[in-house]
Image 1 (cartoon, rainbow, N blue to C red):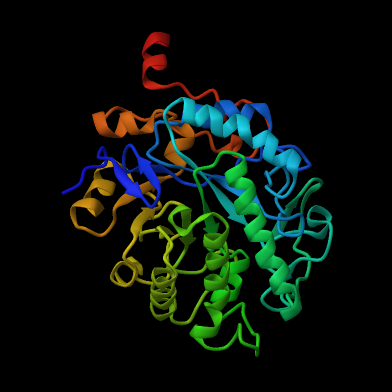
Image 2 (tube, helix red, strand yellow):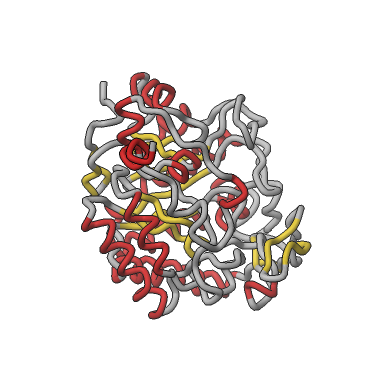
Length: 363
């Protein structure tokens, strides 16, 4: 059976190991969504990952509602990403850009306009803004006439990602954001060809991934899904049927890989309300399957041993351990993450976690 330390081919990308870095919003870009120099150090430090999936990166201003998150819709943003990808490549790593449209999960003061979604709804809880937390702005339904522009935005962001030096892209279709708002029946109340049946609700997912493939090649395209339970206000009455159909569609489109955010029953942050969906997805999708959420070295390896996954993506542990692959492979102790600094804006809790060797020297 494959080991976490073994290399794997992910479409056009040769990954040195099966320990992937999950996408992790950290809020260190500028208020114009431009990457900053400190981000170069952050990603360089973690280049030993088999594949880095970048933090969620906006495809447009109306699609990006998180303060100080980066984007990929302007030339300035593209140029600022280049030192990041160059640093990762110089350190022997591979990195893809996660493409993000937040849909209704934002505030008009950050998005600079009224949020759009599958339907006219308002997300629960609150939005992060430059002036603190505020109630989410009510979203309007995306019109049929606007969908071609949305597809263009995704294609442009993918082209910009390649121009910036990324090895590929991942479509963020999870966590209650725009594509997920179209997928799930408690957020999609449309009566046109994008609503109602499962076939209709997965249509936009198929159209976006097809356009991404036309832009940069399907062998450089992955997708993230979050199939098992409610997240940020979206849920579905039959997730196994929905995400089984979505996986079959993505297999037919020909994307290279899927990553699933699928918390287990003992998850620290997001206990699921339904049984795991990845066995259904595994049967329907023939590409590389990556599982994510709450794994350590032993439990990740167990998924590979069982044939349930081809690689494992790690999030919080990668924040705290820039040399995580070495630590997992050699069974070394892990640094603990500093949760209050996850979304702050300076070096503390971002680029100051020591590697194993650095910690031994300091000791």
